[in-house]
Image (cartoon, rainbow, N blue to C red; front, side, top):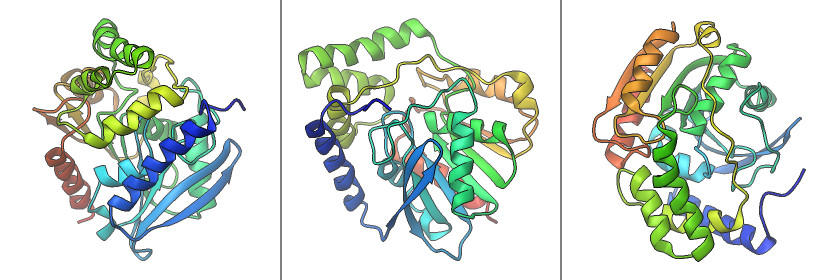
Length: 287
């Protein structure tokens, strides 16, 4: 396993921000570490152990504390397990999983099974959506319901737009270290400004080996085999995974699609108002 953090100093700087975000949430939590065949997986557990289990899966170049902030408020209704996805700038193993096979699905089921959880609800954003759909593809068993926010793996946006508006600013920052290029990158993807994202990603871009593998899309036959109820929240102005295009395809390929929501004013990363709306949708599913 090749290290993905480029240096110990860079790793320390990134994990310092990880810890800062977690403490800023001001919640009661504990760490849980799960050994899987792919490597150690770090999980932040919060909420009431008597409540139903909910797994949160963060997006690309992210970490569990960001997911906890995004889905804030669910810890009152669930026992929440925010997982650090492998091969991302966080506290889990640096094992690179493939988006083309069932690695992600097998991995997350191993985590759930090791924790001996039953009837788990899954909620994830962006790459987290791909992880969740891969989990359902691997096997539907033990998953009660899923909530996907601007997920990868259903449709892709225009690659040329992504190149010029996202990847080139990222590369220019990596070359020049000028923060204006991180801000330009974030302006295309984030609905509202996020000071922590500027701090965190400016470190990640410099000190972490990111995965630039093209994101695949789920095959129609695989989608039609899924039986778990799916709620899909798409963003109309999402450069990476366009919302209207996503909902159109989802309606055709997912027989278990429970509802779709189009966030009319949202870019890829939702603002706090839309995050609250998503949290309420998940709460309502409990009733």
